[in-house]
Length: 108
Image 1 (cartoon, rainbow, N blue to C red):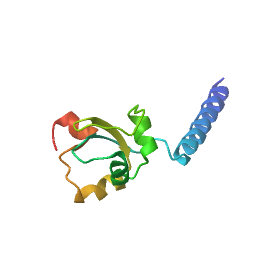
Image 2: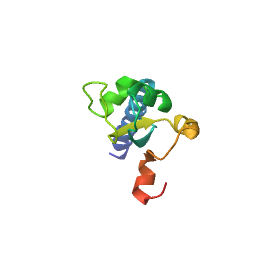
Image 3: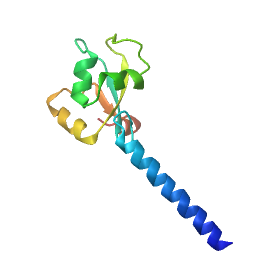
C-alpha cells in the first residue's frame, strides 16, 4: 500500500511539473510575474503603459476586462509585470505605481 501511495504521489508531481512548464511557455500568463496596480494619469494611453511594463495591450485589456482601448484618468489598472520590467521603470514617476506588497503595508 505504501508503494502505491508513493507511485501516485510521484505521478502527480510529474504532472504538476509538466503543467508548470506549459504555463511558463505561454506569453499571456501571469506565472512568475508581480501584480502591480497602476493609476492612469493625464496623457496615458494603453500602448505606452504596456510598453513601460513590457506587456502587450491585449494583456492589459484582458487583465482589466476592458472592451476597448479607452481608459480614464484615475482608473486603476492591474498589470502583471516581470520583475525586470518593473526595475526598468525608474525613469518614470512611480507615484501612480504600487506593487501588491506595497499596498498591503502602506509603504511606497
